[in-house]
Image 1 (cartoon, rainbow, N blue to C red):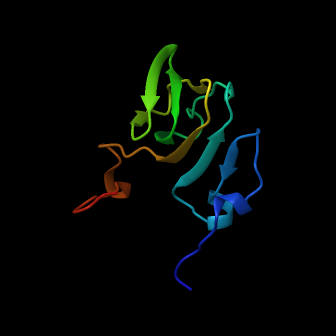
Image 2 (cartoon, rainbow, N blue to C red; image 1 turned 60 degrees about the vertical axis):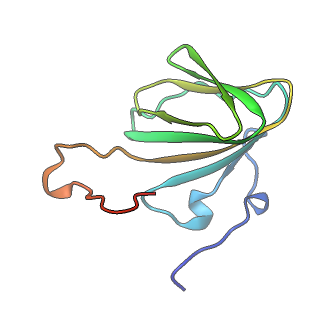
Image 3 (cartoon, rainbow, N blue to C red; image 1 turned 135 degrees about the horizontal axis):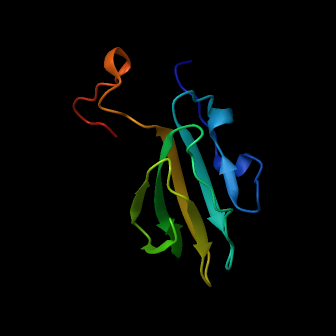
Length: 124
């Protein structure tokens, strides 16, 4: 089989909001998490300096604030936010429920030489 399929609701929830999908999908280069946030929920502030992963947060339902390096970024359904590895980030959910898809992957640097990832055509 050349693909893996999972339903996030079948994956154990962590931290009362997060469904980490990379292990059940057996991904090696990308992390995928679905965050279903209850009213008032907050994630732990963190960065990805240790693994050099950049992240994109896509809010697919509701409204929430993502604090990036102490700067609140108000988000509504449909918004996407790119966060570099060294930036501290935290989701702060408001009074309603919200849902995010969080995607992380190693940064693509211009000076990686022979190991550089080449992107052509549709890149995602």
